[in-house]
Length: 72
Image (cartoon, rainbow, N blue to C red; front, side, top):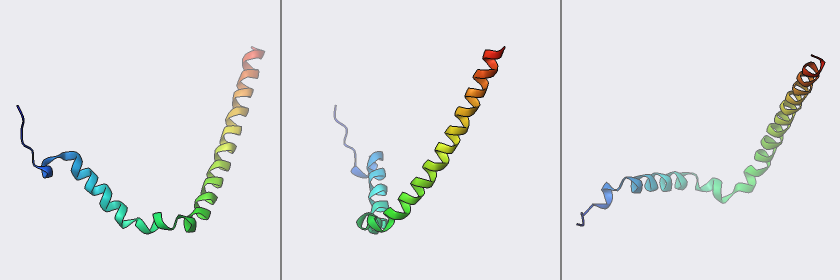
């Protein structure tokens, strides 16, 4: 049995239209990404530095905890 469904009733089609509309609004950003790349790279470097600092602190806490466990 085959059921006729209007294209406007297909739920995922509405989502595709929304995505397409969003991309059209932001098309300039996609056309000229090199203007934003420097800022993005700076943000990434800052995030990475903060992340590595946090990981270093976490590793030092783990080592300290291991020493305390070995002493007991």
